[in-house]
Length: 114
Length: 111
Image (tube, rainbow over all chains, first blue to last red; front, top):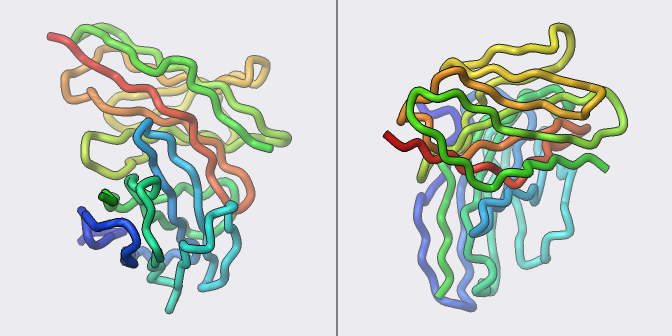
């Protein structure tokens, strides 16, 4: 059983389109995250949710809108896609939002905007 | 603000040789430190973590790391590298509500 699963794994789309990435965790964790990994492998946090409540929004353009229908799911919707949005997006979860809590990562979604 | 520096972007070692990947952190309080590994096309997997206690921590796949407060370092080591260890390695520091990652070190293993 996959602990943190994301779909789709690959996503190729044209500029200006709207797309969504879904994430589900079956670990019973309270906290979920979205990270963006750029072409240089730099991992930057985008959002953090704790029990469906937004905790962190790291100056991400408002074209990105996370939605957490329940604490096991955190989806990412992106409007008006731009070339610079091309990256690998990772969903992760942790037991809680404390600093000692390790994060479990999904396999990533490689988004390519053409 | 918390930050992590991994000074080596790319390291090449021979199979069977020892390995040390460097990591320096900046954090205002007691740090919680992690090493993750990312194999090509995969997500990140936790290798080991340090919260408190013994400054030498053991992880999976034969890796260990040593926390040195005086040097603000948490270097990852392995005595004998295997070809399957070729991957990207990330050091991270746990702050309240988020984990901050370093820029990663790509490990190449040659026969």
